[in-house]
Length: 474
Image 1 (cartoon, rainbow, N blue to C red):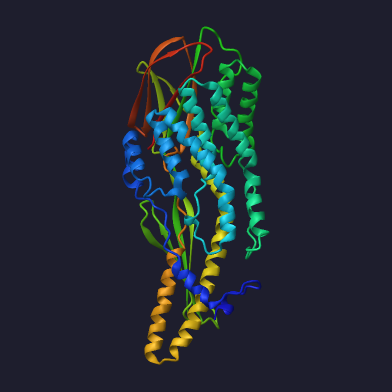
Image 2: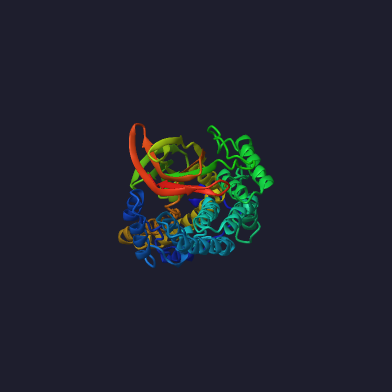
């Protein structure tokens, strides 16, 4: 029956391998820790959200999920203003990502039956890039601009390696002895990050490194020309790169809003009857509720009844900001509307799509191997039991259903992804006479004021780094 549906020149499966499928426990992404912590973060209760994440360590966050824990907690500590703790955790995340990437790839190549959720999570590429941006912001808040510049330089290093990373991964799998098909790779269209360049420009300017500041400004202009899929909105006015007028203080407000995308599961089922194939697709909503998305059937003469196949893929779902306008006030007076600088969720999607061919390829190959092995085992088992009469046939039918359920339980998409990065970054430069001002940043949805964030009294000086970071995760 199976060879009429799939033909594999290299693969031979013993029926006894069916036992291995029953031994695979159901592996799913744990998401219970986000039920309370995400709403708390949205309302600005970052310390309380961090307490929930800490309590989930060891349960929802296993050892294989340690990178996810470091990222979630590191970002919540950043929003809460615990900059040293945030840097400690984001550094642990970065080190673990570097360590686990090669190790996880080797495990995935070595085991065709292993569910992705059973592997160590080594982060999405946008997480690995933006963690350095937020480490830089932590160091700026701690008045350590030299360390901040080191973090920004690491962003460009990672971007330079991004395309080769997945090319190497695909080639390693395709050349391995365990390869059961060829996995493609995709060329990266993300080479230059505007948010990182913007912060780099400010850091160089504050040190009077005018030529380096100019290079960053030119790189930002270049990003709008060469990365139009990511920077598909009006380019904002960039900071000045010439020596600063001593009678003016240049204030830069960087505002973050929204929450980064989450992964949801799309599931495909194939079932067969005599001469017919049924195709069913279900998808998760943002509340993780599974709904029927589509149903179809194909008439294919010669197909036998009884084949069942499940495959599940992750997709990225946006949680974009509800704020469509951000305004900064000094001493209660509007001084600027802050324009968009970077749609971080678009960067997340671009880097996710870079890895998607490998994710889909691995999933299809793994699921196919499992299901073909299962069907061969079912055929052999049911044929033996049917010789025992009607009772044996009935037992064989139930055992076949149990085998379908057992294998389905092992095929769950890896939905792990950090929850507390923002979706949008805005930035504006404002020139004011040196002095002390009370700073407020307002987040608006249409004519409705969502939140006014009071940044207190700030002193702005000529030539210094006068940076205000504001955020609202809605």
